[in-house]
Length: 130
Image 1 (spheres, rainbow, N blue to C red):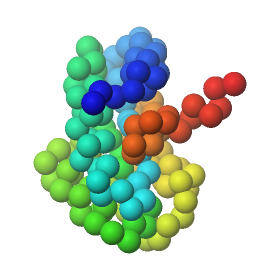
Image 2 (cartoon, rainbow, N blue to C red):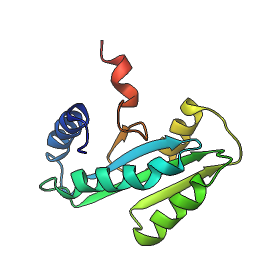
Image 3 (cartoon, rainbow, N blue to C red):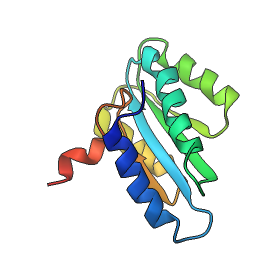
């Protein structure tokens, strides 16, 4: 399964604006709560898109573990151990999606930040497009 078209289109539009500067860095921020099954799938799909973007050499994924009570954090750490572009922020308890997103944005080091849901179905800022 491919990354949804809307995500590709929005990422492409943001990247075009970033290409005007030299060596832009893009940060993808994803809050996760009790989603161990989505961690690796999310990483693999987003990595495929980012690695395929021309002129984008620098990127990171910031995954925020929002107080998960299951194995989500362990899955995130395993991905980080394989790819240092994958960052993990671990919140001490469940603070909610907005707080987790804020923590991820604060941690991100990119020139632009794209918030996205772990299931890749909804970009978090798509509700504000109208």
